[in-house]
Length: 420
Image (cartoon, rainbow, N blue to C red; front, side, top):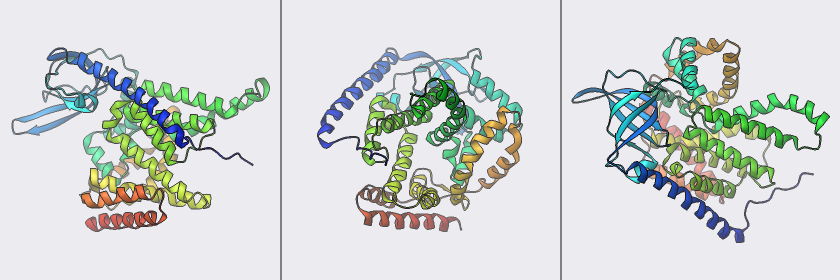
């Protein structure tokens, strides 16, 4: 019989943990503030940054291009350039940036800064070379953009991002915890046969699952560094690592206590996550998975497998409507697309490796066409607030769980009614 897993913390241990986390947070925020003051030494700063997005904007004075950049110091910002500026997505540039109005909060989140004297650095990026290969392999720019998002974590163009938002599958195109979970499982089952051969002959005394996970973690770490550690991937990697350490040490992972401690620890280590919307959406997704598993842990595996995707969709829809407001009649089909993506994602990677990467191009074009039409569905603040309140109450109260389910069903009907 398997040993019962223990809770992460006893009540008397909480003060000690909070003190440790406070010390970590104070150190992390101090480092960030020192970086901020160093950047603000003068009114202008000369920095190097990688261009993450580039798109055309219009105003009363004409057209211009807006660049989203990530500096080599870790902060992200926007700047504008001439409308005829060449395409520099994924390229490194050097520029002089105005910092006289930069606040510490802006430095930790994202901000706009005037810039000048922009020069394009020589292209030495393997990531950019891989993106060029994907452009050659997929002549259609939209399909190429999808694979660049999935393989090299390149942000989608705004029009394509809107199409996927209408379909409710934007989360599938931003490499995060879902993708790391799929990659982890794939790497585990690919490495397991070879490891078992050597394990049985040379070191049977070692913990096989632990060794395999270390190999998986190292592989994912190298992949993350290759992609320049995008924030969504960094936080997913950190949560995966924390989750395994807790599981390996015999602690209960599927608990709200464990989730809370993990989130607080991540915020202490990486202050920028506090201002990252993607981080909080990831936390919300994990929260609702835990909420489901806690209340339905005694039900059959078939019940859990069938209902969990529907549950997570219904619970996360209020966040999608309140923050983004994009919806279409195809939006509920994201439940199906998410399930199929678990097959498509590793299969498409394998097909690219063996030279058949264009196999799904027509399917992707068909999917893009489905997202062309969408409407704005705004969720009132009081409804979203009620959803959050019931979600928190449902951790302990069963009646709140049922009320939350009914409210989520009402929101789904409300959204469908606006486009039907």
